[in-house]
Length: 65
Image (cartoon, rainbow, N blue to C red; front, top):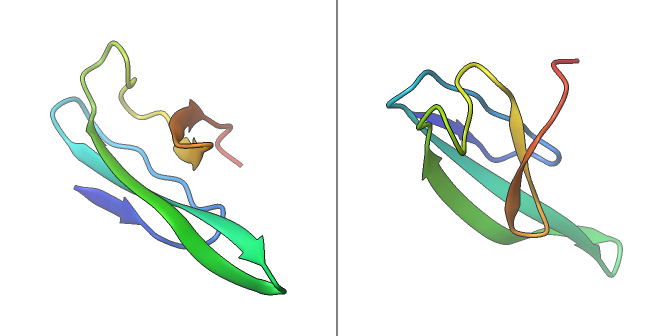
């Protein structure tokens, strides 16, 4: 299991692993968690060894920076 809870954090895993991500929003000059989701890396919808971020409540593939 990979858990990433920081602002604009990302996570990846192998097939069969779970990833947990948070989404943040700035409200009144403070950052607040607005969503937390988990998903299993299945090799189809969620690709193995590929980074994801939570954006608008959806898992979005991101570059390995």
